[in-house]
Length: 113
Length: 112
Image (cartoon, rainbow over all chains, first blue to last red):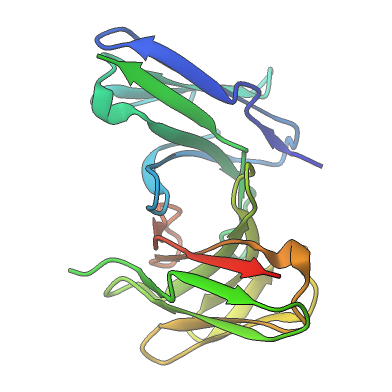
């Protein structure tokens, strides 16, 4: 049962344009959402997060939007840069005594110079 | 400040064997989590250790076990290896309550 879904396995965007990566979830108990970026031969790197009490969080070129009623979140990268080319994982967590994070299957972003 | 280091980077084992993977946490991090990432999938939570105690576990059988040491380094042990155990095993460390894991580069395990 895939509770966090990233339906687009890949995305290509021109340098300087906006990249929008989407993520859907099924478990309404999730209350914290994260995005990780992964380069080949490296572990995932934490990028940005959002709590369920917010609908938007910004960090420089990266903005995450959360629509709880639709169980949907998205990551916007503006402007996109070639160094942003990587696999992006959406992840979510339920409040509990430990940090179990449920990951999506990832979207491979290619930013074309 | 060093990050999370994992060893070995690659490993080939035969079905039925046992394997131990190792992880050194980032300095100051007291929580270690282990994840399995199969090809084309996202990481799946195996278990988490906090101050040397297992405090959370995912849907993995008991033949997956672990340890955390006083210096917060950790081991993942897998007994009776199966072909489906072939995957990238990721270790992640954090400070209690912090979801922003620091991941290692992983150990690629191949079971033949």
